[in-house]
Length: 124
Image 1 (cartoon, rainbow, N blue to C red):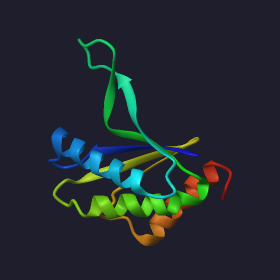
Image 2: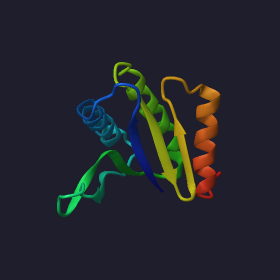
Image 3: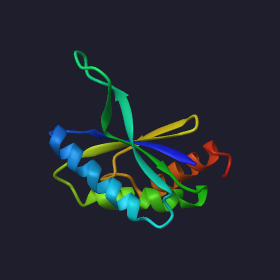
Image 4: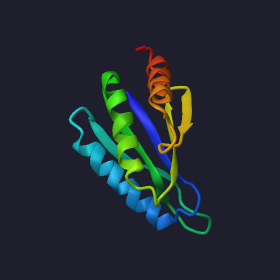
């Protein structure tokens, strides 16, 4: 399965802080034993520029359906350790799209988010 993950700045988070946090999350995902692939997402270049640019804070993660819970836990763990860089997380899988604040999401809410992603892939 493939998850589209986007870290969105909240509060006073700068583009530089977002880029650094995104790199940290992607590195942690690459080290996760069940993650098959992590790739930057591309988008149209800003107005006035040519070509395609890397989407800041956005990446694709390939993983088996059984690894969704572990990946969500990893995301929350890395992002909670950076309270000076508040972000919200957007995850899309199939036709399901969800958003959460890693600093405020409860274990029960996290379990529901995982279940929604699994159902979107027909594995729940």
